[in-house]
Length: 103
Image (tube, rainbow, N blue to C red; front, top):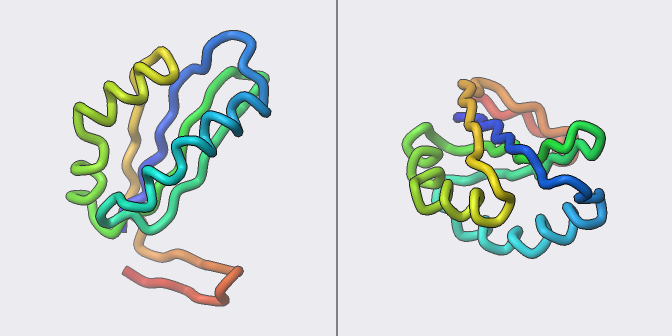
C-alpha cells in the first residue's frame, strides 16, 4: 500500500467552514478513484495549508490518480500546484473496524 500526503497553500481568508464546503463538494469525485482505499481532507487555517492524506492499494494507482488533469484541477480550484509525497505503508491499524492490515 502507498500513502500519499498532498499539500498546497490556500488563498488568504479561507476559513475552516469555507474549506469544509470546498472539500465536501469534491468528495464524491473520490468515490470512483481506482485503487483508492481512503482519503482524509486536511486543513490548517493558521498556516493556510490544505491537502489530503490518501491510502492507495499501490503506487501505480496513486500515480494514475495524481495525473496532470488532477494537478490542473487542484491548481484551478485552490490557486496553486499541489505537492505530493509518497510513503510505503506496510501496516495499517484501523481502530474503527478493529483490523490490522498488512500489505
